[in-house]
Length: 127
Image (cartoon, rainbow, N blue to C red):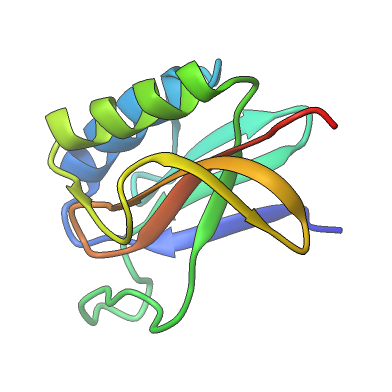
């Protein structure tokens, strides 16, 4: 359904360090600089990117927005969360763990990146 997701950041290199670390835990290669203003992280499932706002105004996080990344295991989710905390992110919501709902049983961890964007890693437990 999506071709890419892009979030705004204020310190491009601090954000690159954060996303290089958390996305590497999910098997994604480091970001590729594009036009000196954004980094792209590409996978067979789509692209994620970080950018300084093109209008020159400060980046602000989306109120109510979350970007979710698929993980292959609960161990990857924990590694994602730990890498985020070690690279300028902050934890939010409940601690990493299983949650059950209409979408089934999921192991999930939430973080805020250095600019306040809310992200998560999610592993869907097999039925």
